[in-house]
Image 1 (cartoon, helix red, strand yellow):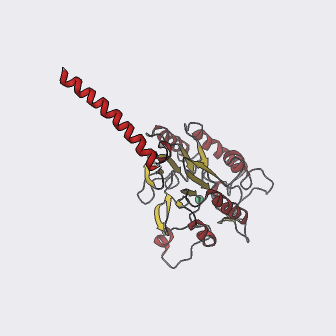
Image 2 (image 1 turned 90 degrees about the horizontal axis):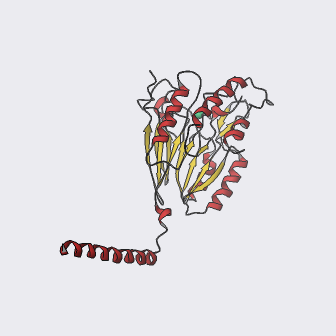
Image 3 (image 1 turned 135 degrees about the vertical axis):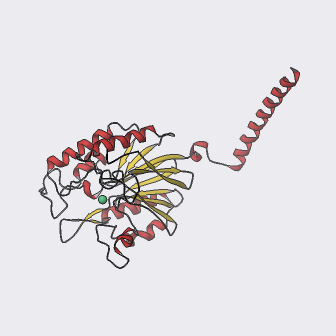
Length: 313
Ligand SMILES: [Zn+2]
């Protein structure tokens, strides 16, 4: 079989030659190392609203099972807030019950998780609230201690990307109710965090309450004022700061709708809701789902992934 032997020899030699060529080619082109250019995936799961009713905990566990089954395996999840049905206007026992049910799903998750606070995760910030200010379930303490590494906003780096997890839940000045707001201390931190990140690193920001949304215009008409609880009320003050950096993507929840806005070089995506219409079914025909984000070297892809939930049982 001389022909085959020669062919194998040729392939072997040419393989070596190609390997040599590619090595020198890489060096001369100064391409980054393979791990920096390999895409990675993460998930954005928002608005779980876990509660004892409407089989919500079963749905949450089914969602986690879907996450665990994905291939390729995502590097981590980011939860986008409203993790539990409501802490605003219920007592401490009810709040603890909901967090315990949320934890039953989290214990089954096989990849790391980072959590963003939503309005419904905040104890007692409502005109209908019953918690006293010194109750340990009041405000954001439980979220920060259990799910935020002691904080309600923070950032981290992953494979060449920078991730900023914001606390978009402010409190009105004339009532105990929440509004969409990034407070002064957080804005100072955000400025320093962006400066330290630099101008080139691609950035993902995750906020529970969206910066922008056209949903309200669709549902209520274009001239009706948008309530301060619907959007981050002071984004106008820091929008130029974001444009000075390589912010690629702002992920949000809160509205339970799927919405994508491309605005001045930044993509804003509302990732629907894991609970759909508060565990009563799809929202505007969109199934209960979460977002799958694939990060390339300086760009991303986004898609929705449902987890085959049937609210009717
Ligand atoms: Zn919300």
